[in-house]
Each structure stands twice: as structure tokens, then as C-alpha cells.
Length: 129
Figure 1 (cartoon, one colour):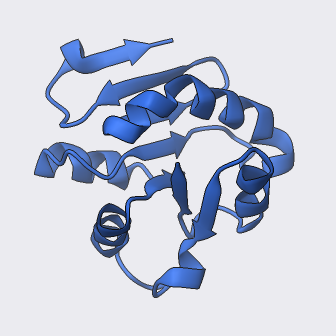
Figure 2 (cartoon, rainbow, N blue to C red):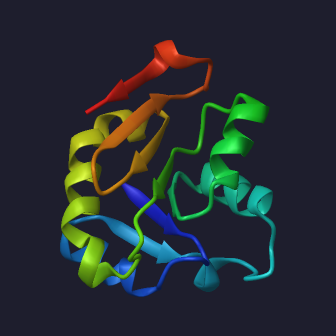
């Protein structure tokens, strides 16, 4: 699985993800840091990447467009530093990797993680774990 780390997260996430066997790039290394979310999403889709973000707008974009890709992982923790959220995030990636490869929105919170299969339709397409 290839992961595109959004501008609102530290580039250090790329190192953490690589340590766990995933290929990751930070948006600042492949695109214009000032580009809008739709541009980042289009690049991720065209290049086969899952988007890792803290931004809620990506879920909205998926819902409005009824897109089947790219998959998005939203990190919804207070501390976004890899040193604090690594174990939680890595566990969620392993848990939902098959869904992410097929198209999903995964929300990672301290209390739980959940996934919704793309395209987003309604409550019946979610899988809470």
C-alpha cells in the first residue's frame, strides 16, 4: 500500500510508515504545498495512493463526489506526532488495509477506529471496529 501524507501532518510520518513496510511520500515532495484538497486527491487517485490526513474536508469531498477512490485515512487524535500516535495508527492500517486497497474512508480515533466503504452512501456501508 502506498500512502500520501497530507501537508497538515509531519513529514516524519513517512519514516514511521516505511519502518512498518508501507511506501509513503509527503505531499510537499510531490505536489505544490499550496494546492487545494481536490488537487491532492486527484494526484493520489491517479497514482494509486491512500491519503493520510487530519483534515475533515477529504471525507466531505468523497461524499459529495461519490468517489470510489482514493482511500482516505483521517487521524482524529489530539497529538498528531508520530511518536504519540504511531501504534494506534499502524494498528488501524493493518486492521483496515484490505478495505483501503478497495476504497474506503477510515477514521482513526483514540477510542476506536472505523471504516466506510467507498463510494459513501449511508450508515449501512460502515464497519466499526
